[in-house]
Length: 275
Ligand code: HEM
Image (cartoon, rainbow, N blue to C red; front, top):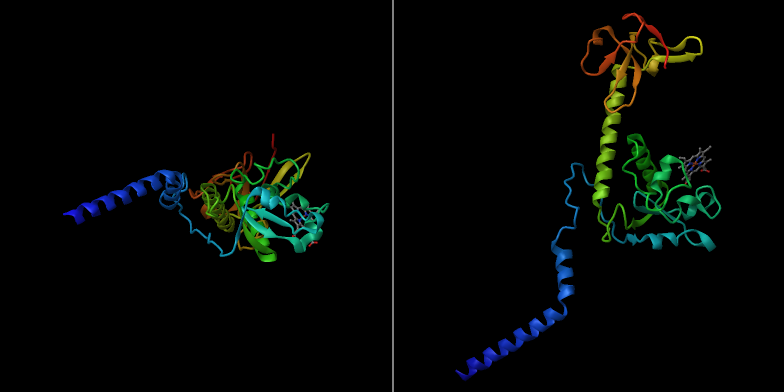
C-alpha cells in the first residue's frame, strides 16, 4: 500500500513538472503545431495544372534585403530575380554591372519590366506584380525565365510574392501559373484558327482608306483556294481581324464572322474607312 502511494506522489510530481514546462514553452509549442499541421492561409487553392515546382536541395531563400546586396558594386556578385527565381548573372557583367544597360534588373525582382520595357517607373512592391499583364506578355515573361535557366545559374528563391518563407509557392504563384496556362491555350487555339481562316492582305491609303484582299498566299498560308474577306471576332479579342474564308465556311458558327459593309458577299477584296 505504502509503495502504491509513493508511486502516486511520483506521478503527480511528474505531471506538475510537465504542466510548468508546457506553460513556459506554450508559445513555442503552439507555433510548432501550427507550422506542422495547419495549412497556411490561402494556400489551399485547388490547382488544375501540373505543379512543376520542386524544391532543389541546397537552394537559397532570399529576402528582398539579402538580394539587394548582390548588386555588383565593388565587384560583388550580381544576382537578379524573375518570377521569384533568383539567378547569378555575374558572368553577364557587361549587361548588368553598375552603370550598364540592364543594371535596373539587378538585386531585385522586376519581372514586369521584362515585358513593359519600362526601366524606371515601378515602385518596388509593384515591380513583380504580373497577374494583370496581357496573356502574350505572360508567355514572353516565362520565355525570359527559361532564358535565365538556360544561360545563367539558378541560385534560389525570393521570399515574397511567389514564394513564402519556406520556399513554397504562394496562392499568387498558383494564380499566375493558371493565367499562363490559359494564355498558352488561347494562343494555340488562335493559331489553329489561323490555319482555317488565314489573314487577309491589308493596305491603307488616304483617299481609299483600308483595302483588304485575299490571295492563295495571304496570311503566309499557302493554299489552293483564295477565300472571301470577313471580319472575324475571336473570343477575348478587343477587335476583329480580317480573315479569308472559304465559301463552304461562310455560314460557320465556329467563329463570329461579319461581312464588310458595301462589299459584295463573294468579292475577294473590300475597301472600308475606319472612323
Ligand atoms: C522590353 C525591352 C527590353 C528588355 C526587357 C531587354 C532586356 C535585355 C536583357 C536582359 C539583356 C541581357 C541578356 C543577357 O543576359 O545575355 C539584353 C541584351 C541586349 N539587348 Fe535588350 N532588352 C529590351 C529591349 C531592347 C531593344 C529595344 C534593343 C535594341 C534597340 C535591345 C538590344 C539589346 C542588345 C544589343 C543586347 C546585347 C546582346 C549581347 O551582347 O549579347 N534590347 N536585353
